[in-house]
Image 1: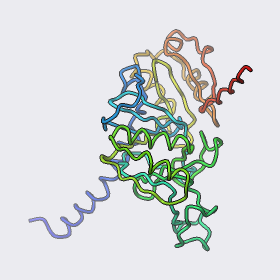
Image 2: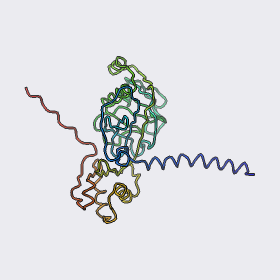
Image 3: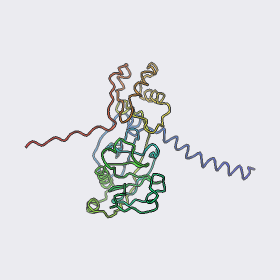
Image 4: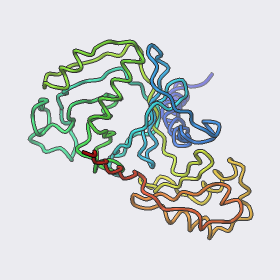
Length: 302
């Protein structure tokens, strides 16, 4: 018969190992936009009413958040994420609530001024960092309003995802359309006033965060900066990604692959077509911004 000590110890191992195993699986999960998950192409579509088959995904190194419906891309938004000392989680969550004009209860953390801890900071208080909307993700993590466009593509928050206000409005509208919830008057009022308004979604929306710094999307390789320093073997990861996407990487020199990786730094990514890699045309790769600059608005002709 097993002793009580052995049984307790076994239960302890089960308790501590399961979260670790989940973390390993989460870190290995590929971007929702990768060819290995999409089949090589992403179909775009407008939001469908009364169809709650929604999923929201964020790939941290790309700073891209994508809303999917029936596996099709409805809209992609550029976001800011947690600072290196306060990273956003990697894994799965559920979204079931949207809150307009939220109050803020400062956490007991060293980054919060002691004078604010334990207080309730109202929606109209300039010390409230949440802006017009927050979407709880559990365990204190949130989607909430960004301060400005400078948050996009940046490590700026304390573990949360920052989204531009109009993008949050758009996301909420799409949630409501997909779930057949007509709250037009209430939402319009909440946008204009500062009274807290809570929306309980009819069905939870799946939310997935990945950390995939090397992604093949639509037969094009994207190498993103390893913003959290999570990837300890970028060279090995690159070889695995190329092999998984049909590229014979065995004849490519380490020096050529390392040169591509080195070009992805700060807020720049390195992009190159798989066919160019296959024939050794590495010079055709480009260094581009992770978050593209907005196109200048055209002036109307008078």
